[in-house]
Image (cartoon, rainbow, N blue to C red):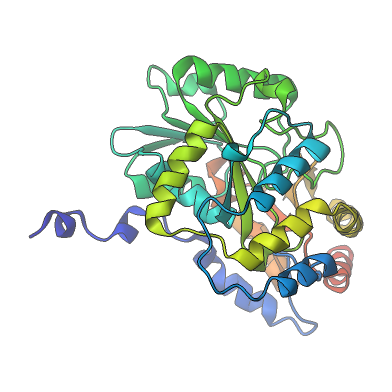
Length: 372
């Protein structure tokens, strides 16, 4: 038996894919006579902005291989957007790397940074499952916690934070972000902030990027931020994302990704430039989501739910103080499909995640069923 056979397939190290557990409830919801209101996933349903589609068409003649590092225009657009919208300064072209969707990057980052068995990776107590998947793929230990003291004497090689958070919509305040940056630097821990919902804020303190000088003290040392255009620009199908921060860390990722041929296609890079350069479509989409969020929140509260956090992201984090699967089942009988909070960690067992990315018509149908 080879060493590879002794270890078994990689899939055996991974947690179960959580959405497989929702199959029976999905079937129940789809059987509703007026159709399913699928609020279980945060996939965009509104049109991709015309300015982005035009850029993609204009770049369709693309016979040669793209470079892994990406076009200078793509990286500069990311730098300009971060400066214009989020107060980021000090970021150069060598500190930005386009990637093929943020989920792929998050799942592979630990491996690409040389983290493996014997190392520790930390991520939020309530978290999208891909952080755990990335640790498992690397063969590293992992700890889901919101407390820095929970690591005890062990120092994590990599620490993930997520603000605004999926699933809860929680925004980490400035003082907390500063504390995490300082804590990580003192220990030599790589700190990575997943910021794909940064422009999906609704109330309270505006979310901050970890790349903001007010957060990091004007230094990018030891930190990275992951950004996606899927949510802000309805580009989930284009797989447009980027990582930015410490040039040394970006350089490590680039060196590995070159060898693997992980290259964002050229037409998508041109579309990404158009999306990052245009703020008008972001404002229009934000208004659409704000209206859907308001309608669903009111309906949930009228139906006896309490909505916790949810000041940002594309979800409402709702509870009736019961087991999440009881709530999922009850709503499925009404033709409403939501995600059980258990998918995101044990502390979510009494919550459900309700996405407001469905069409206006389906959101209205769900709200009507909730308040009937």
